[in-house]
Length: 445
Image 1 (spheres, rainbow, N blue to C red):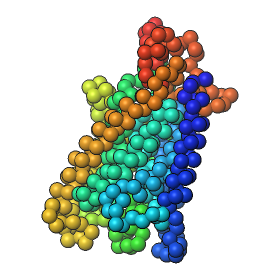
Image 2 (image 1 turned 180 degrees about the horizontal axis):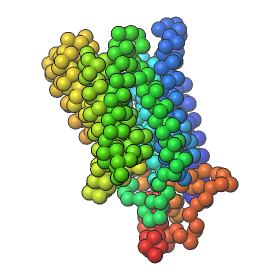
Image 3 (image 1 turned 45 degrees about the vertical axis):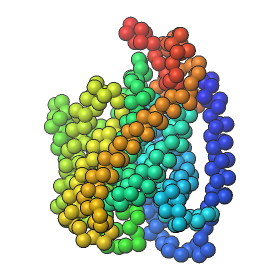
């Protein structure tokens, strides 16, 4: 048994007890608990939870030997991240505006929706390294990203810059994608024969597309989640998101056929880039951008995302040594940059919107600053987190096979790589990575 498997229940249990104590001490309910509550808020909360647990989980189940890890670890990380965010975001709000925070602090359903946003950011980062990190490493990533996400969102993007980002293009998608890429860079290249486990199958590709359709259906709820109290802007968010998704879907099929051998459709493109419109629209969704503007942004996002899968992924692997399992840079990174830059244009067009901040620094400049600082913080904090993840398993005597449920899940149907195909030589004493290193000599034989 791996040493980290023996430590995991103790670490996870102690962490849960600590969170329990902190939530007991730091949170409460407001006196009039029903004040401001509506069934619409619960519907939004439920829709986003379906996106997280089923949509993201099934989308990442395209790895033919890692379906349990995709769906199961999605559930674990979501539950852990939401609890952490209740506390960490409260801390960051206190750092930003101490006079507006009291202890114990009243929480309500919108607090849980904010926690879902944090979990979505974590799951995006998880997609970049899925199959390559152990459960213990994923817990380390959850702890560290929860803080950096809340810091970026509360203190920097919405606090210092007062940027417009109703649907999380910058604070969620951009932060999650580039944080994950930073972690991936530290973890390095997948080794040896484990690479074959990263392939998909006919069944796993269909499971991934099921996740795509679920995300597609519920995405408008995600973008308009904070606008339930304002029917006008909520309506704009929903309309613009649907139009952007329509545009990115058709664009994906168009460009996928153009850039795939034999002019066929690549299931990886279709499962991911069709959602790019929802990513890009978030920063501009409640602005007066016209139906055509939303559709155009979706088309551009779908084309850019498909281009990323066709040409960007090989470039990142060959030249930047960033190995992105799910292609989160193509689905969440590139479209979020497009959406963030486009928002600088749309806020200039709709400059009289009451929720914008044109005093002092012009709102378009605020949008650009939010994009630049988010990318910088995400990559640097992701790199730091990757180092911590490797350090967390320092001294491991064994390695585990990548992209294989059998390393972490029990089942009579599990099949791990035969022991004689693993390199358990002196390399095991020198490495600090918990990832299985398959004998390169065996792989070359």
